[in-house]
Image: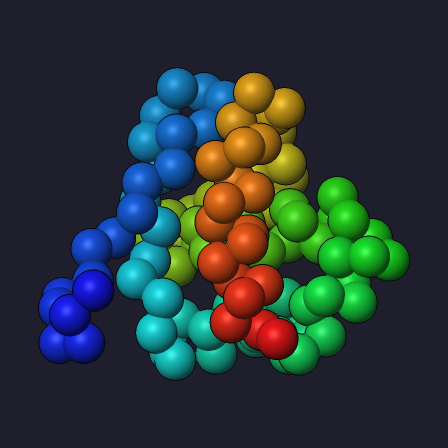
Length: 100
């Protein structure tokens, strides 16, 4: 990828059949996510080991909240079902890679 290439937002199709736009990952997005999650990205891996489902839901919530401000944590949990987990896992992998 070109270093000056404009990043394109990613789309995540969730259990309700709707497509949710994810924010472009930049420092502001990451800082907002940390604020929403209540802990820094450096702690993310440990949290994923300790509380996998809760942390996964929280990370996806923090991401979706950036582009869907009215979404709730509970709603995100309902929208992330096993059949959309593969796509969600790809997004989480990208965030985890940044947090190391």
